[in-house]
Image (cartoon, rainbow, N blue to C red; front, side):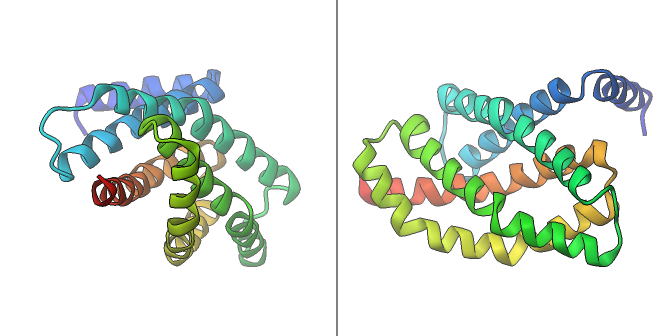
Length: 185
């Protein structure tokens, strides 16, 4: 690892320890913005849509990082920090029946209403139509991610890990939302 990368990581760890909520919120926002820039490039957008990227950064900063921070702390309290297979399975199951559906629903609503600026009725119908396939796809992937996160990732890094995974998932959701929007136009 280069000297610059080591120093950046050291400073990040200091911030994470001193200001965990703020650091996780900023990290989630930056990763959300990066994932949107990648999604825009992959989907063929020639000029970066800055407003769209900033709205997704705001979503990561205001919701993704803070929600993940408090959710993982709550799980650690509820399950007393245990990491045995049975406890990890319970955490993953709880995550899959609560926050996974909620996060996908909320992201789709936010994306339609605020990022695309579409009317409520159109967004509601689009979510009604696309949500089941999005959620079923999430259930194929996210239990594995959840298992890795709860079994092997230390508590202070769980939001960072999930934010990175979420940035990849957001690329999928962005491209899915964009493909539906293009079909409607």
